[in-house]
Image (cartoon, rainbow, N blue to C red):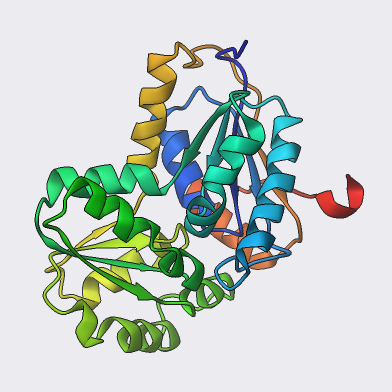
Length: 271
């Protein structure tokens, strides 16, 4: 039986999931987080479905060994490609949360029948998951999806708030395909890092939605409904990476305003 004091497991291909972890940490300060950033294999967006599912299963096994009560897939590509597989693979051992469903619910509630945009990695956009789920709930909504594959490596290499990142953002978002949208889903947890640049490109006339806060609220609701909110003392958060990068640490400090103790763990080699 799951207990409130058990930790929450979160994984992503790199630094992007830290946007979600940060939001959860702020909303649920008593919860212990165990984060795994698969920096050795990023980005997931250009990998095959079978490869992404394989990585996701392996990371899920690692986090389940840490006795987590929730497995949160803080990666849009893995959420699109591997979520259903993980639900079958893991069964009802823990609650499994993806980052797509909370964003879809938010958009349907706040922008019914509107023209909305979705940007993400090749894997996320190719899957059509956002568009399918949005239209299942609102057939009158017009969904315009666009793959922006250079954003993740750009962010992981530290190109933010500079001429290079502005040029790449402009090249993608100036396409006619996105003209007329009222709101834009950032369909990758890396993208909130450049959210302000994206908002500026649209002259702050387009509502830019990242999933971090909506996912945190969604998770809180699940924990409350199942009496799994931790209200007592917790152990310190743990942050694992499959390969160390200086930029991961820099981004981590930016989000958490503290130096994180990153634990390098090659789960494929170390077991």
